[in-house]
Image 1 (tube, rainbow, N blue to C red):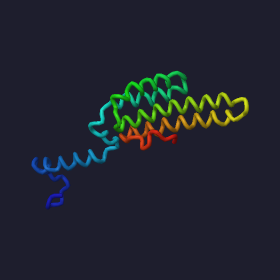
Image 2 (image 1 turned 90 degrees about the horizontal axis):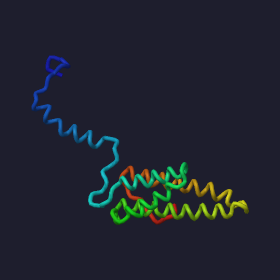
Image 3 (image 1 turned 90 degrees about the vertical axis):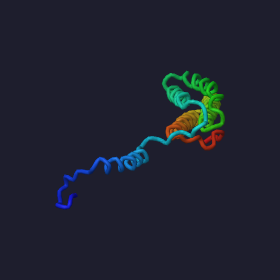
Image 4 (image 1 turned 60 degrees about the vertical axis):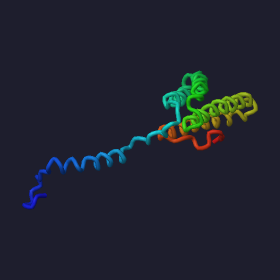
Length: 149
């Protein structure tokens, strides 16, 4: 407001320019985008996103999980032991544990254990995909990539 009470106060170019860095910093910090991934960890997040997508598509196509695990193994060397490496380890273990649980479920289907195990194995697989993909989107590593849960 100006001294005479007018709301149409005009600020000088110098005053406006001095507030721009502060406003830019505020907007940068308050945006809803995920944090930048850690620097120097190597690898590309595209391949890791692709593996999660291929695993999710396996519920429709069936075979894309195999392609996903091949991509995960191929990308593992580039990612190293950094935060992307934790995702690739998580994805590879998800595939192999999923194959084992599904195999046990199908073998035990005749003795009724499979009727319980197959849906539980599917839920476990979906949960692992969701947990990993959310952490990847937030630029976070998987905390314990070798765990079952």
